[in-house]
View 1 (cartoon, rainbow, N blue to C red):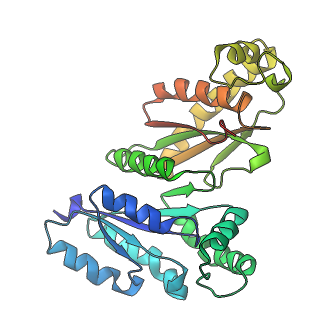
View 2 (cartoon, rainbow, N blue to C red):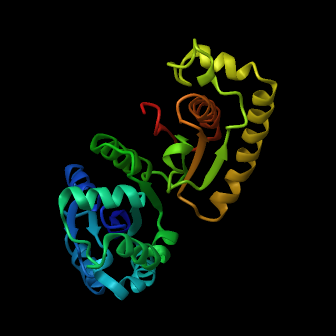
Length: 284
């Protein structure tokens, strides 16, 4: 039945990994089409309605659509009105990473300009699409395996109507995750990196955890921040948000942010929402 059909629109910044993500969807049994024109999406949905064997679809769309992408929000509303479970997955990456990827592959940017200028223009053009996306994935620091795992978790969690929570630790020296909805800076806490016995450990180690919890400011912060997040969750659900990413940052992303992320993920599992925990920079 059409009400059980899933359509994922895969889009985002050129060089952020759309082709790899489509391959991941294909591995998960999705019927994949790359660069389907937005103007044909409505006719394609009619084809799906007459094809009961095709119940999971992933469509790649990018900046090559140009101004036609402006019609995507209205087309999505039409799909949902006809009973299709349609979602937008937006892929992003830092400018430095995108430039490096284009340099390594020697591919030409779809906009044809100097890569730095093309990225700036592309971000501006795609901003309205990013704002309506159900999920934004920052692929900057991801391996192919991590990307596939992220897609797998996203697909598993879309089976429920609940909002999914992702809690991510990161290091400010490597940049703030682009898919973050809430960002918390925990660099105000004493840094275990300057304790010789803890320097080579991470926030997953008991010694580091005891050190952080031994700080009165840490215990007070954890109580108040957890209380704030818990109070905000129903508000995000009420606004119809499907995914919420909480990013916790310290200097290097190995000690303080890792422990705080682990602590929050553990506590928030009692909220009834599906939880993802990810430590972006722990191995740097």
